Amino acid sequence: MTKFIPVNEPLLNGNEKKYLIECIDTGWISSEGPFIRRFEENFSSRVGRKFGVAVANGTLAIDAAIQALNIGPGDEVILPTFTIISCISQIIRSGAKPILVDCDPFTWNMDVSQVEAKITSATKAIMFVHIYGLPVDLDPILGLAKKYNLKLIEDAAEMHGQTYKGRPCGSFGDISTFSFYPNKHITTGEGGMIVMDDESLYLECQSLRNLCFQPQKRFVHEELGWNMRMTNLQAAVGVAQLERLDEFVNRKRAMGALYTEQLHEVEDKIQLPVARTDYADNIYWVYGVVLKEALGVDAHSVMQKLSEMGVGTRPFFYPMHLQPVFTKASHFQNESYPVSEKISRLGFYLPSGLALSEVDIVKSAKALIKILNEYS
Ligand SMILES: Cc1ncc(COP(=O)(O)O)c(C=O)c1O
Image (cartoon, rainbow, N blue to C red; front, side, top):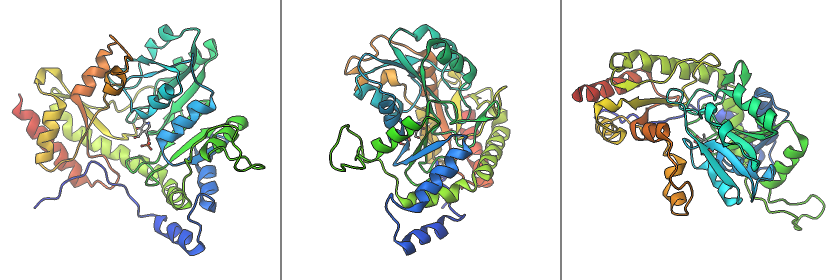
């Protein structure tokens, strides 16, 4: 029987085991252990920031960013509709209003030309989210933040090792956040990081991570936080993974190039990822494809067939303005973002994990070509 090709499988064959054994041998398994500081320092300096706060996942990293920037009732935050729910949930919980923009049909990132028209006197922040492997076109966003005195929240969850015009992603937000879920370029199993340069934001995020315990009066709370601590075990894996980030980025780029070479012959039927823009080369966090409308089939049917042929896939994000949890609560009434709606219906990604072999990339591409040719 041929093996099912999973959509993601991480590579954990560096120093991960050695550092984990160190944790066990020394008894440091909680969030107090020395790998936490080491991971925070190594990671934040890698992305060119002064401070890093390791947390339990990338969703909580965003939650903390929203709270640390004092975003709440009366405030508006502009963000893309084509993203993961993690970006919006704390905006809504805080009582602030999310204001959506559509995405670019080719990079799938926030359409930055739509942002300025959405700015009002209530706008407090822009949250930009780098999607699938290319960064958001940042110069226009940085210009707007300056012009209107807005805070920037950068969700760089998928962007480890990527740069915008040579400067690391994760270095552009007042607060920038990362995820280390196993499908990311580097993983800690579950995990996240909040990075910043401002010391007061750093201290606030540290406090929010740890239930807002106070150093002098431990169990007396002036503020509500979360327990979003990362464990020393997770940080040990993170330190080992970070040692290999450049290798992993190169590997993903080679994987992306191989997929593109294989799928070139069906470019009349599917849109492939953009390999480079004038500000960045794709790092292919995932290898996404969008079926051409003329094919007359949606992503779900093609993914189903790929699964039957032993190839794992995931659908593209489902836009925020269509999420039942929000429409039921009367958010985003009569709002429509056609590009996001289209790519969410027609887009999906192929096996993209770092452990994927070249043979499996070729097999996955060939399976997709076979299916697409049935529709011609
Ligand atoms: C853009 C983006 N933001 C946030 C997250 C959330 O990260 P986590 O799964 O670590 O909570 C993800 C996860 O994949 C993501 O892709």
